Length: 293
Image 1 (cartoon, rainbow, N blue to C red):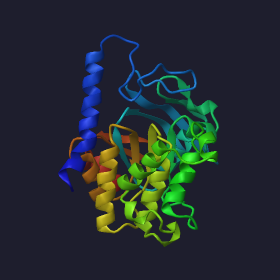
Image 2: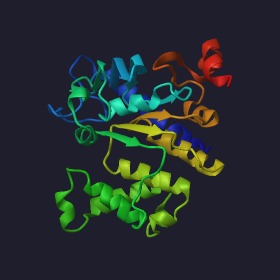
Image 3: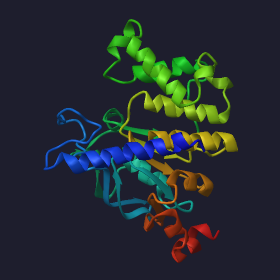
């Protein structure tokens, strides 16, 4: 993996931490927000992007989530692993408003109650979700897909009824470079490889500047080279965005965690273990229910 890309996200995260240590007192704001927080915006002053507390979800008597508690820090890249049926997808459904829990609380920042919001409102406050199967406009070009994603941002929608500004064109160009699709700008999305479609959908999310990205098995079906580039992409986003990556590919998880970042293992709807990848790999319960299979 390219060393400068591998360390870019970690450097941004360290910069944020140093900023937090030097700002002093309460009432400050993270480096990601240089203006006062409005009532309809998440407040990240305490450094936590997402809180899930005792979330329980049942379907016909089956507990998909069983008093699940989880916290994701601002700018953190967290990998979530676990066997099929562990509750990973249901967890993301709760965060994005698709599923309402039977009990518990879900908070974005320290002030936004996610359980009171609809799916579209949750997307608008800065939570983006990437499903396993890529969803792009296959008849449109890469550029047009990113342009439409920009138009979905309520802050810039009105200005797009005329023509793109230089700033907006620059933003599309930056995202195309980030997702390795600059050379494919005018290529019809339906002609892209599976991995390129995955990158394009991630780029469409990034056009709306989400504070939290939920990524469900993002490298499933990718080639080794595409998987490597995806790891580089996610590491470059760390520190600017909080990322929750649900994945079964342990080599990919190892690339993302670099041996020291926290990994969460879910089993039967709750946290079974949490720690570095080496910690959870050495956990006998994790080996029995997941890694040993």
